Length: 227
Image 1: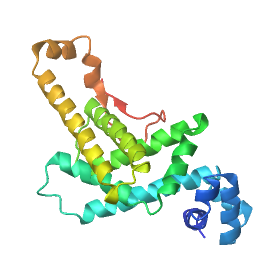
Image 2: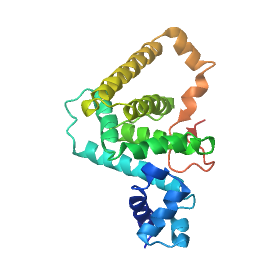
Image 3: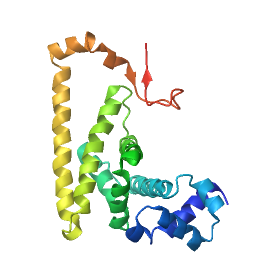
Image 4: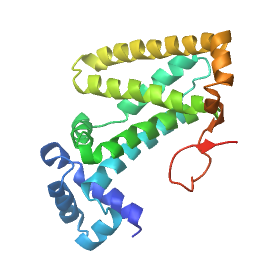
């Protein structure tokens, strides 16, 4: 059995335990027992134990979202509505909200904060890429950073939302997306501003040399720098 298959088997076995024990070592051991997978094989597939399973659970949700986006007809939608739909699909891909709540608790810990931020960034990157984003400059980063803020806030609101059909969450999401659209309008006006244009050609010209990631960076850091 390949490592990825072992990880998926462990993830499926772990899900019933997460609401009670969180993404913890206890859950990881219980998953091994339920799936009849030896500790050695389990550790080889998931070196960080339940943390790797929590990341796999997040990736599973991303894949479900991408499948929904691929099937949906978004051609008649405004772009802001496409982004809203993508975030909504991502949340609706979750079968058990408690698994996400436990994940938020895990990734709030300082030593796992990077993994949590990485997971959110990857989700937003998937959304922008699926919707056809072709930016190759600093805008590649600002789009994903802005959407990461929207997505994070919406997840937290959704976790506490008990309204029918999560209607309050979708209204909250609409307001956050509207804020983003206003920000994009300000950026567009700034590009036409002679003062800002002068700064971009002068003190801030280094921003024009920031490029989106292309393949694997030899430094292990995101992005590229062009001369």
